[in-house]
Image (cartoon, rainbow, N blue to C red):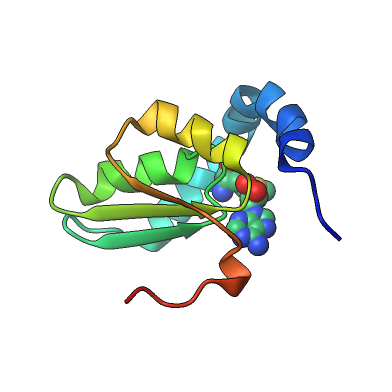
Length: 101
Ligand SMILES: C[S@@+](CC[C@H](N)C(=O)[O-])C[C@H]1O[C@@H](n2cnc3c(N)ncnc32)[C@H](O)[C@@H]1O
């Protein structure tokens, strides 16, 4: 089945801010469990609009590296807006991506 990612993403984008507030306790628990250290590299598969990317970036700092992959271009565009060049973003289906060269 092929999805139209614009149609998929629109309702998500409409409520993205509210969802982030509702999901904040989950993000807090995730970051505590991940115990990221400055300088580490992080890959967020299914990064959406980027809340986890933003938190990971704070944790690893400028010496680290944060990469997000998402299949839906409109969600990645929102992540790019909020993180403006501080993380690497890649559009694609994580299920069919190979390892980095
Ligand atoms: C429930 S959302 C979570 C988004 C984000 N991690 C967050 O916490 O707000 C799941 C995300 O996974 C993405 N996604 C679903 N299937 C994917 C795939 N095969 N490859 C890459 N991204 C995918 C969707 O576009 C969506 O942004």
